[in-house]
Image (cartoon, rainbow, N blue to C red; front, side):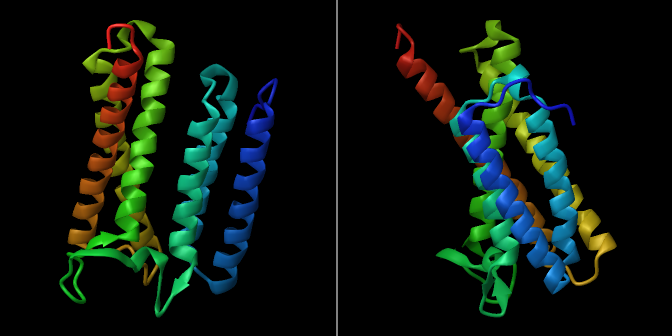
Amino acid sequence: MPLPSHITPAEKQIGIFTALYVIGFSAWFLAIGNMEFVVYIVTMLILIGLIGSSLRSAEYPPAMLWALSGWGFLHMAGGGVPVGESVLYGVQLIPIISDGQGEMTILKYDQVVHGFGFGVTAWVLWHLLVRHFPTVRGTWTSYTYPALAAMGLGAVNEIIEFSAVVMVEDTGVGGYFNTALDLVFNGAGAVIAMLAVAWRERSLSPAG
């Protein structure tokens, strides 16, 4: 991976934080034999490589990089922090809907992470779009395309989860309802993020 010609202090801090939790959780997953999350760690390393190699061409704001790193941490913690007989991902944070032992349960830690993560994804895609095509800034195109693209990447994430089910026995991925709810929260996070970006841009514009 080509290294950026200059790394800012904030980027160094984020990089160190990210490296520490990736190494820590990788060691933990290997120690407990959780091969499902080893698949996710490989995927995460690829994403870290993409972000790291594009630091200077994209000039991601520090808040955006912290959000991306935070998403990774929440994801690793979700699969690595034991809670009772399960892990953090299975915890229901707010009892909005619950069907006992079934998958139609809302609101779970897993769903919050999905919403947050693909909200951040939409934000990153918006940033890249308006940076490289500044003429679209402030248009509904600049908000709609990142939201839709984030939903598409959310579908890719579900394909990766399906790959884990195929390759690794006894995963905690879940079934049809889990996949459908993941997609719903991915979409909700992306839409909310773009609405927030649109509101902020319009409130800061001279006409707003």
